[in-house]
View 1 (cartoon, each protein chain N blue to C red):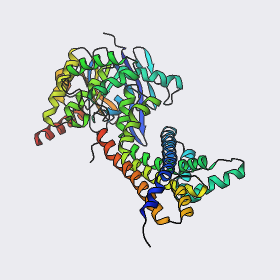
View 2 (cartoon, chains in turn red, brown; view 1 turned 180 degrees about the vertical axis):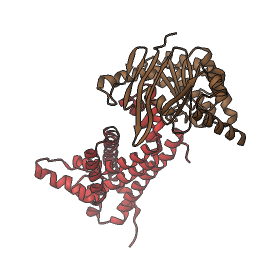
View 3 (cartoon, chains in turn red, yellow; view 1 turned 120 degrees about the horizontal axis):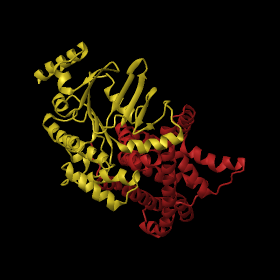
View 4 (cartoon, rainbow over the protein chains, first blue to last red; view 1 turned 180 degrees about the horizontal axis):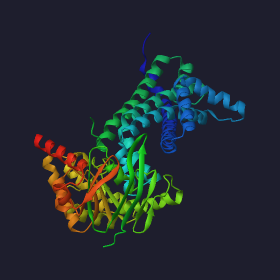
Length: 220
Length: 258
């Protein structure tokens, strides 16, 4: 079989449209998951409630213990049974957010553990407490140490969006399938898809180095 | 002198079955410099931390300038915890481990609390910060990150950060204990300046020389109790109790080992 690159090149404009949706779902899902995970982390530490902690532990082990594809199907096909009818795009973002926030919560737990208790005490002794204490002192330190695993999680999210093709979100993978099922040249089309996924994730993972340098993180 | 500047009344605190504070009462006058010594685990740090309610006592009361700090019980109401922030800002605390903020540069370390707690504008917070950093000898370090500072510089930064809140009382918890010996002097110099400016201070320390030179009063604690107090020079040279005598002996033996 001959590899005809013209099929790849012809597919690229449409693939890029799909990549744009991939980025939208990935970025939106990741931002929402970081917001949710941050809220969970702060609530967990400030409430220090046994009930909250056991619900959280159950949620995290549920997400970690089941395939993300099953979770996506659950949101898309099972929620409508309870009268919650989400379109594929929204369902995809909800599924990605719920999945990723479990992992981001674990990442932030590690980052928070690296902030010494003295940081809380020094801040409190200056009269800083509550929201300001978290917003200005604790969370910045938590996030700075969490940059490498957070960037890693973001690339995982971007790759996981390919699964959303199965609930008809017209993202990069879905577009590829549409193209090669019409022209019967999956190898050429998927090569283009492959390169685009790789470039996106490569740029994202390199940004970790850039962010760390910018934030003057001293690596031990 | 106003003897009711700071009053500690019957403070009690235990951790599990260890009693860190056992019925400790103390009256501090404005401008008084009080040193607290005692063996490790005697409750001297807990005493300081009870004053600004960082470690709420199980029983007892803390009064600053006639106003009650915290509450009579170890739990606070919402109103009491709001008031507590104002009290804490007035009582600057300096820690053994410095606890400067690593994600903010030197200037910002001194500016931040002024803006978020005292609600000062950036311009006035910065000009105050620059003045104080100059006083503690860090005026050439304002753009540096704390991780590049020496221990002595970090501690001077921590002191500057609390001074920026215009404290009326300073609580210093072994401010020089984590420092290399040659860096202790630069921190003591800053503290001497505060003494000379009339700052009221409670200092937990092992620097007996510093205590006897600058202290108005020396407290010796053991087992969560105030065992002995008095003029530092007097009680260090002629301890009245056996416990203080044996504690001082141990300190001297240790200092010969160095």
